[in-house]
Length: 502
Image (tube, rainbow, N blue to C red):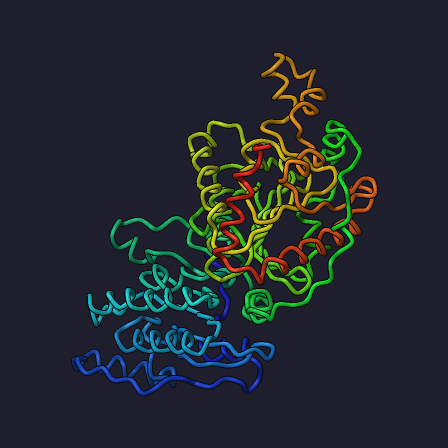
């Protein structure tokens, strides 16, 4: 069982050596003092120094990861269980603030039982100033990456351990708020097994990945390749700018879009993007297979991606309320990191269930629309295939909208619209034509700005289609990068204000 695995965990120095380029580490640490330590506590500190060869429970500094300068903060669990007292907190805050001043991405590797009991409430309160420093770092648009190590609990897990833009965890690591030993002492029974384990937290959408230490540098490098700003490239206008809407009728396009072999978001990221780092869940204990969240780079343009996932065989992936809470995590990431947001729409409709209603699906759609229409970063939406109902609308508002030739957008699946109008689904073809759901109508009404041809059905040329779509995405992202956010917001509002005005 996961909770019973016995593995050796790297100490702070070993982790630094494993992750940073050889010989690149430079310590930022200065000598610490504990002026209010009594005799017993001083003895414990001395024993911890002798045992570990370090002077506190955290090491801070900088180094290179694949040649890129990165700040690091790493816990030493062998030093009083990695606990955080005033001296350790000051060291962490100083390192975070220095990373912010010097414009460095920051990698934190906590492994701690929490705050230091020997220093009482004042040490506990130091989590506030650490969190404040991390907030300032994030607000500066600088990446904050967290590697949760075994074990991380208490005030550390409840502050700087849970604030990463991207959070990955060590396999089998014990991670949680309340330590199991404390729980058993308070309640007289053991804490349930395998709840506070990295793999379970991944399943619940609380961490983005579970990776061993020897793979951490790969993950950090991929993340920073996407997150670290690059000069605005000159992107050649793609041939798709000249593509016209298909002559196919609305119902024909709908049928084409429902082909199970049609390229989906997974294929777009595999063949249209050149670098992808999947993220996982809301970070708040929810994970819905109806939506994919990722960091990606299309050509030279990085972005945050949120999009619908097509159901796999034996899998139900209709978009539920948790999907949109995960989507709004992506929106916040894009805005905070100064990255454009790409939304990909391909859904037969949002979830229709008791759970979706009680989970507040309608409110989540409303909040998603509210966020997107005012998001303070460039936005591009893609109509990839099916676009039914509020599930599609929730990811639609954007500065520019790209559409595959046979994509569509409708208030309901056409069979549902027919049932409302004619009390039978049999008139779905006629209703879809009358409603103007296809790309020709959407382009004519000013919603769709850029069309990607399918030659004549994307299901027959999935890789090539995704490559063309990837080039169109790169072009649209690049075209927005030089426009000020105030102008973008004005244009965005005007675009949707004009729709349907004739």
